[in-house]
Amino acid sequence: MAKYIFLTGGVVSSVGKGVTAAALGKLFKERGFAVSIQKLDPYINVDPGTMSPYQHGEVYVLADGAETDLDLGHYERFIDTHLSRVCNVTTGQIYSEVIAQERRGDFLGGTIQVIPHITNEIKHRIGLVPRQTHADIVIVEVGGTVGDIESLPFLEAIRQMRSDVGRENTLYVHVTWLPHIGATGELKTKPTQHSVRELRSIGITPDVIVARSDHAVGEDLREKIALFCDVESKAVIPLPTTPVLYEVPLLLEREGLGDYLVHRLGLEAPHPPDWTEWEGLVAAERAERPHIKLALVGKYVELKDAYMSVREAVRHAALAARVEAEILWVHSAELEKGRGWQELEQAHGIIVPGGFGSRGIEGKIAAGRYARLNKIPYLGLCLGMQTMVIEFGRSVLGSEDTNSTEFDRNTPHPVIDLLPEQRGIGDMGGTMRLGIYPCHLVPGTRAAQAYGVPVVEERHRHRFEFNNTYREILGEHGMAFSGLSPDGRLVEIAELTDHPFMLGSQFHPEFLSRPNRPHPLFRALVEAAAARAGLRPAERSREEAQAKPERRDEEALQQR
Ligand code: GLN
Image 1 (spheres, rainbow, N blue to C red):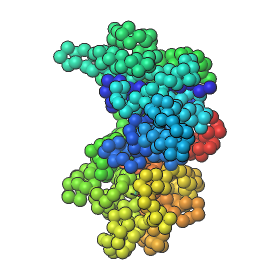
Image 2 (cartoon, protein in one colour):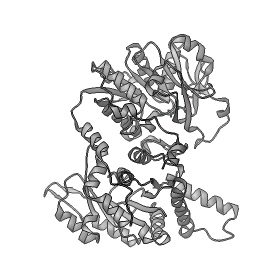
Image 3 (cartoon, helix red, strand yellow):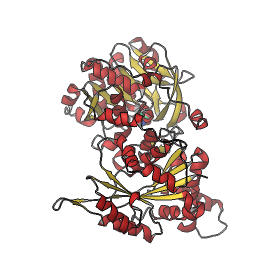
Image 4 (cartoon, helix red, strand yellow):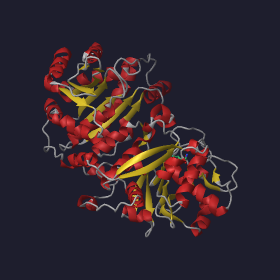
């Protein structure tokens, strides 16, 4: 029987509930439990795939192709487990399912209501997590803040779960915020008290309160929250803001939360936690390191959350290379207007991330040209690979009209194009090449060298592909197609032979980078950038040399 931990948020949003959920998962994972984490999102979109990154931040793609909330990225990076489609549920999915059932006549003339029909479907989706992932511990994060209208059915469903699966199998963790009053220099617990009262009014009594704040929380405040909110004082867990994300599980552990949760769920941990590796990561992140600058040329750069996984992948690779990588955010549309070039000039490496639509495309192409001509290390992620190919194509074919048909339907040289089977698709949601696909690496290339294995599996999210009509001519001029689909038909990685490091992948490597296992392509970029900055390549540590490449999902599941 799986145990469930339900996580709700109080007072305000954006206090790091997703990271807290991920860190709770890590507390269990470190003790040898199989953990899964699910996010319940109250919005009505079926998934975030069709939402603007400005609205929602990055769309995180799972191995099975699910387009999910960026919190799933935190979950996977912390617990290092491949999550499944069932781990992200939205109001849109719940209603579409219930309405489809109603149209089929499944309810035999009954009136369909929020309780029980919607709440039953939510509970069904929660129950799918342990069934599909075989997790011992299922952490369920409810999006939004207690008091929102949209999240009420989810809260009602998790309330019912306690009697459905048993009190001993459920815990409610409420994450709140303690505001700091500058005039008196105090932290205030009143909003937390109100939020707990609100939660109780819908029938949920929290077992644990995680009190987030920008300041240290004293023993007196802990006691006060315990008293007013009716939880044990050791179940009030202060969590001050830390600039080092991966320190959060260590902070929770230090407050005794790991043992407390295990005890409250009546469990016995397979083994005690060993935090050596994560303590090492945190210490490495805190240590003074030589500085490098990487320009990230994107079009959603005002909202850094839009590139969450890219940012984290850079952080992981920099940690492993023992450098500190500062990201210079460059707006691709600004480059088109002649602005932002000073950043590119300072950069030791350039990343062009994924994206859709034509805005800012010429700026990305120009950044690629700058990187190629000035021999600046370059990593293109999905769209960034396509713009790299367009740029190279323009120079080889001698035509500035070379393009992707995504941006110019009538281009005379469609170096990036739709596959014939994609042409008839009209729907925008869920119709791309999504999820993991194998990629065969061509021996002797930079890609093969970076990965050190012959075959990898990487996550995709795109519609357009490299057009094979141009393989020969671009190949003759120095573009190597270093990663291919097993049948050789799809170009998964392209790189330039006459350049220190200029490589683009049709997939999104950022989704597979982990704090203790940086992605090989990011690692290669950071090392090339460090070399450009005049830094000697760091010695690879022994653990890394032995680190296994990403396991296949099925194997990962069987081994648990
Ligand atoms: N817009 C491009 C495509 O659909 C690239 C997508 C992406 O970068 N994720 O192929």
